[in-house]
Amino acid sequence: MNTYISSVINGVKQKYAHQPEFCQTVEEVLSSLEPVVERHPEYEKVDLLGRMVEPERMFTFRVVWEDDNGNWHTNTGYRCQFNGAIGPYKGGIRFQKNVNPSIMKFLGFEQTFKNSLTGLPIGGGKGGSDFDPTGRSDSEIMRFCQSFMQALYRYIGPDTDVPAGDMGVGGREIGYLFGEYRRLKGKFENGVLTGKGFSYGGSLIRPEATGYGAVYYLENVLKDDGQDIKGKTIACAGFGNVTWGICRKAVELGAKVVTLSGPDGYVYDPAGVCTPEKIDFLVAMRASGRNKVKDYADKFGVEFHEGEKPWGVKVDICMPSAMQNDVHLEEAKKIAANNVRYYIEVANMPTTNEALRFLMEQPDMIVAPSKAVNAGGVATSALEMSQNSERLVWTAEEVDNQLHNIMNTIYKNSVDAAMRNDLGYNLVAGANIAGFERVADAMMQQGVF
Ligand code: 2IT
Image: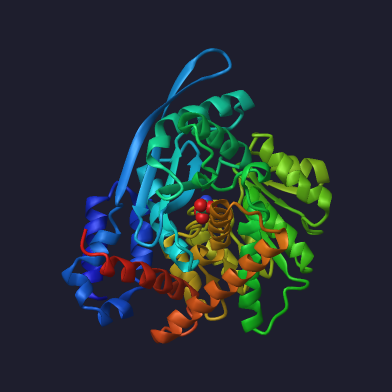
């Protein structure tokens, strides 16, 4: 391996040994960049990689809120403004009890490359809190969001940093966050957040965009492999917004999602999550705040496997769409043993580096990385920002067409980047390189800081 790359990776591993997810993404991304870094010895002189792995700014803040029984709670809020070289920081907010600096930094780092890959002017950021929304009432969620925004509003803005949703933060939370921002600023700056409701500046298709984009990307993979999506079975994980979008688009194109998962286990529905009733139920299940996928099995009378993951089910396509490090080597081996040909990551970093390496070594398997596959979500957020700054509303068709074009371009640019660098058909390295090149170029032109 190139000595500059390995010295940066080792430096991060030593300095941030207590941040395993962050070390993992740095190792995965940087180790793909060998041919580019070899061609650009000037990068080492200005320590381009060393600067890229250090967030431009990251801060925590106190979030205090009152529960329905009159008791007060204190959580930690975070915003990681990782890289602003190509546009205002952009990335979601996650409310989940395991949120910590390592998770914020891994997500911010991934976001930087993903956002670059979209071709749109958005830098990388991420935020969140270790607040656990499970079982919290609507009033509690509102008070938490208001308190969170009271601390954050000074540091964000339509040209500064534009948060959005992520796990635990959907349309409802974005509404409460936006309301508090508007109240504090005394201004209607709807470009400050994306994923808003349609009535106050949200974009049509944004809720569906991550899932739709993932399926558009998948279609590109299948087409290049001489296959049709019609009739294919898909294993998904999670049951949130992203999985919902995949189910909807898959049905429309004649494929079906047969598994869903949650913290309690997974469900297997061989008929597919296909009918409007089943697909709508995902939304209701998520909105209930119970966080249990067993509710689906109870409602539709299908198999529920308690405490298990869906990766042993025989399908044509695996789309891990739940969370980071869902697929370890053990699950990867089951996927390979089932002769799954398409492993399409959807959640951010759903595969451990060891499992990813194993899957990429399988001669008959095609692996696509999440930072390309799920980029339709943030790309559509950028389209929402465009509409907000133009004070216009685009039709669903216009947004969907743009999303479709962006996903086709992301796929093509990833393939081309790998080919140009003599790496063959390598979607993982191609996405890393294509995302890197644009940020690197912008940083080189803006001087050293
Ligand atoms: O991981 C992601 O790309 C997101 N959570 C969406 C970010 C955004 O700004 O829409």
